[in-house]
Amino acid sequence: MKKKDNKTLRNVIIFSLVALSCSWIGRLVDLKAGTDANGSLGQLIWIISPLLTMVILRSWMGDGWKDLGINPRVRGNIFLYLFSLLFFPFMTMVIVGISSSLGWMDISPMSSHYVTAVGIALIPSLIKNIFEEFAWRGYLAPKLYTLGYNRFIVHIAVGLIWGMWHFPYLFLFVDTTESMITYIPRMMLGVIIMAVLYGEILLMTRSVWPAVLMHTTGNAFIDTLILKKFVLVHEEFSYVAMPSPEGVIAIVLTALAGLWMYQRRRRASSR
Image 1 (tube, rainbow, N blue to C red):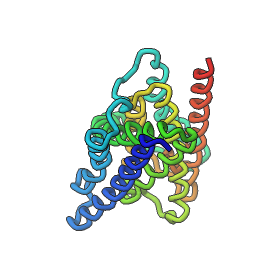
Image 2 (cartoon, rainbow, N blue to C red):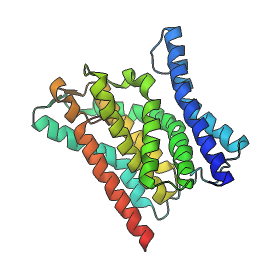
Image 3 (cartoon, rainbow, N blue to C red):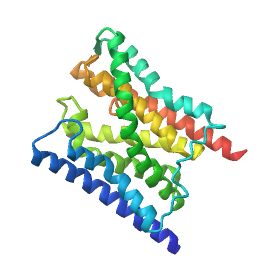
C-alpha cells in the first residue's frame, strides 16, 4: 500500500473512532444533564463532531479538500437532483397506501396539518443534514473510494459506521416495543442499503448536495409522519409497514432504487 493510502486509511480510522466515541459522549452529557429534549447539548456534540473531525483531518492531517463534493454540479444532473428530492416522499406514499389498504396501519386525515408540519421540519432537517452528509458523504465515502476497494464494500463500510453512530440516540427516533435484538439488525440493513443509494448518486454527481436534499426530505416527510402520529402502524406489522429505514417494504424499495442507480452508473461509465 502506498504511503498516501496508509495516511488516508489512518485518517479514516481516526474519523470513525472519534465520530462513534463522540456520539456516546453526547449521550452521556444528556444523561448527566437529565435532558432528552431535541436541541440538547449532547445532541449538538453528536451532530457536529463528525464534521469537525473532517475539518481537522482535511486541514491539518493531510487529507486536503479536493474531494469534499461541495460543488453542486447541477448541470447534467437535473434528473438525479429531482430523484433525490422526490424518492422518499414517493416511497412514503407507496408504503402508506399499501399498508393502509391491507389494514397494517391507521391514517389520520392527511390535512393541511401534515403539510404544515413537514414545512416546519424542512429547515431544521436541512441544517442537520448539511452537518451529517458533509461528514459521511463528504468525507468517509470519498476517502474510502480513493483506497480502491470494491464500491459495494465501501457502501457497506460507510453504512455500518453511519448506522452505529445513530445507536446512542435511537430512542428519540424509534417508537416500538420490539426487542432491539431483532430491531437493530434490520435497522442496520436499512441504513447500509441507504448508504448504497446515497453512495451511487454521489459517485455519479460528485456532489454531496443530492444526499443532503434526499436526507432532508426523508427526515421531514417520514419522521413527521411517524413521530407526530399522522399514521399509527399496528405493532404486529411494524417490522414490514414502517416507512422508516427499518421497515421491510422500505428496505426493498430503497434496495431496488440503489440497484437501479448502480446500473445507471455502470452504463454511463462504460460509454
